[in-house]
Length: 501
Image (cartoon, rainbow, N blue to C red; front, side, top):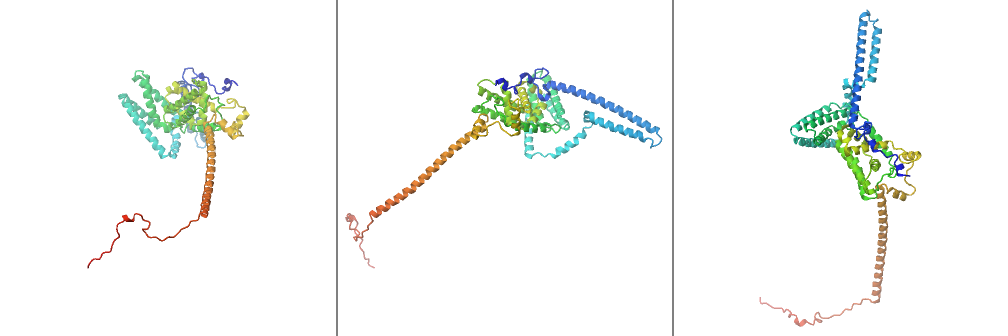
């Protein structure tokens, strides 16, 4: 099978990563293939049309209500008795019921504009029911305080503009505290409007210096999103959590996908490649621990660079885009990052749009979105499998790896899984240690036997010698100094002396 046919389900043309309107910026699946700029324009146009339609419908309903009121009031005055006025009142009540149903069915936006308090009450109850861990609250508070101090230190270098930036940022954060009942898209629109207004004012102040504006906007984004993270990440008004669970179950069901099926040009038997793969997995998992969209993008960029390094070391040549995407899919399948969809949506909604439209951050993020979309639509054709085999693998009835020979399964699995390779090596080491241990035990037993036999042989020899040469002790009386040849050198014996009393 040719290399081209092998990659028919994974290859993505680079032009497909760009905005569908042809502006040259990177698109995003969450924005229907548009870049953030074009999507924002389309969203605002659609929103204006919706608002106009809602106001027109509201005015129509208001006129109908006034006409009905005038009609019922005039009929009430003309009818002399209350019994005769019952049909008109019944007609009016039916009209009121019809009008209410029509409002509920067609004018959801108008209800949101005119009666937000009705949606706020249950939100407060749900928030009160949540009691986050004290350690998590304390950690987030420490991080928030640190970011606030860093932001103030940075603004001191700007002097007068810094005070104005801090004032506007604080006012915006306070205003967002009163908008918790808004949907995810409305929250995103508020943040993006603030970014746009702040950027325009900074461009005017710095005389069009985009580098200075970018540097200030990075600090503003870090300060604002750190303070708003709890309320805007995976908001209750969105279905991000449901998407997270669906994606997580999907990746778990695809645990059997091998590196060969995806045509990944990576050899994990090479130590440097294996280290790069582990670092890439660590980076993509660590993305969930970051609070600022820019920091989450940095994790994606770092992961992608480790992937390019693994491909380069394996092939001994620079990696191509056709090699990068399948390898990124493989990394995502192995890592199964927590809250993947929530993190992607969070970056899409609240990141500085200039980062997503251009540069390496935007390129790598767009590829990650493509990888997640590919995993969601992965089928037998994409992996060069028959539909029957694909269904059996997905249901867990069979595995593409050989299971009749465990040793062969480990050896084949070690070629694409470093964990299996480590298990295989550990089993070999344990087997050798077991053999050496058996040899040591046998040697110790042999030494013990030899010691016992040696002890018995020595005892027997001693007994034979004692029997052959019995010990005889002869008694002989002699003077104490008879055998002392040097007795002449001894001092004379003491003589008793008598003292006169």
